[in-house]
Image 1 (cartoon, rainbow, N blue to C red):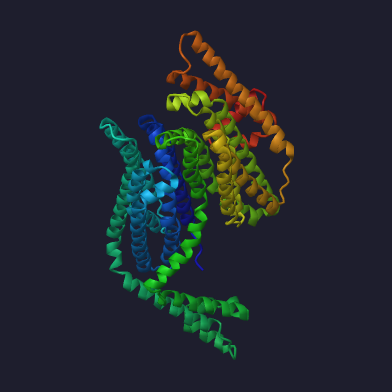
Image 2 (image 1 turned 30 degrees about the vertical axis):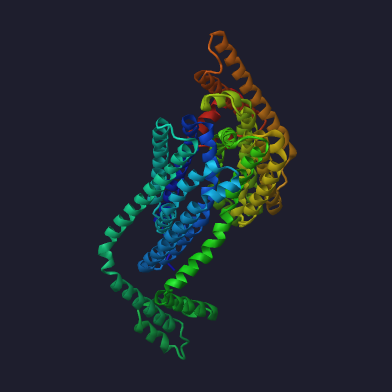
Length: 613
């Protein structure tokens, strides 16, 4: 069998780097586009957008989550078998299927907009639902084309379309917002205009993918002229190899047969030791040769390919629904619960917008965890195969310790600096208490994401989805309990509790699978000391900066002043966090030095300060 070349491994690593970098860039753009949305449109528009967007993402998941992965898988298989015509047939069939699903879901979403708005409890969201439905005409087909190129290990088309999609989405959203605000459009129409950014982004991303398809077909046109001849030659060679195998493993009746077989074919010149192969090896070799012939001769019909794609895609799609469902809980519960407390539809959307102010900041932390989590899946699989149980425990323990600290630091830092950060980003302090509670979700969501990746690396693929589904159920229950009493702060507190539950379930299963027994001091006591020191440093610095600014006659509520206070508090907290983590042993010199570029310099500095040993 032909062994994978080193160049193919390098190509895979390069593709992973390109795709990972594009994902980080697109997620940063996506996370921070909500800040200008609130600044330009206000909390009411922000609330409507954040009500509809989780519903839109759920529909996108239903329409396009599993099929692109199925396309990638089967295109890769057919490409490896040297059957480019089957790869092209797969993408033609999947494109028709995805285009049909996109059209169907777009029509259903558009027609049912008023009914869905009634379920949410606010008719102001209906125009935005209709606007978002138009993106379904482009996005599913775009994702299918991405899967086609990924199946051929060409990641650049996906990376370019991701970045351009997000850039166009944000640009169009801001331009439309400014125009509608100048036209004095209503609240719901401004929000619908902002949602058109997703339509423009999807159209731009699809255009990029179609451009790559055109260029790919143009480059392949000359080679396609020789496809028939090449495939005929491959079939002839495999059939010839089958005959050679039969001669190679034939049992001779006398020694003279060996010399005859050496003269009959080129393969038998090397008969030597292989002639004495065991009967099991002979059968295996013959079966493999027969399967090679059948692989080139047998082709699926169009209907069989569609069934194959759907059978693979549907379970993947169902597993991908957990996270969108978690976000969708707020869409269908919080606005209705706020209306029950006496708020009208506009006031409800304004409150819901204020509630979502902390979302981009939390998403920035979870984006880091999500981007890095893909590294732990192959790392855990390799540790399990090569290092055994002890290597798995060390890998899991290191990952959980790092991201538990990162999540705690992000939660505590955002909570203690909520007031200046809120003023810096959004211009006022509305919803600061809710922002503090929402900050607590960073710890639970970060650990949940990393633990899920570690579980997947161990082969427990379904467990993280069930954990998120359980967390979504708890979120809905806690919303009903907390929102009437605490308002949007209650919804934020419910989210923190739900994500912590998901993290606890994933970590508990991981501990059971790996026999990991973390020490309470390393999990609770030492992190509590580090986070307490960090929080005091950040808060003390922020208060001191506000006092200095007040003495200079600069109001702390001023946006630029709030920016200075926030940045100084963040810098002080980060410095104390690193020093305290090093002093308590939660951060070792080897781990710090392993960080690219900045890590070795930081380790050297801490050694000079006698913080690290």
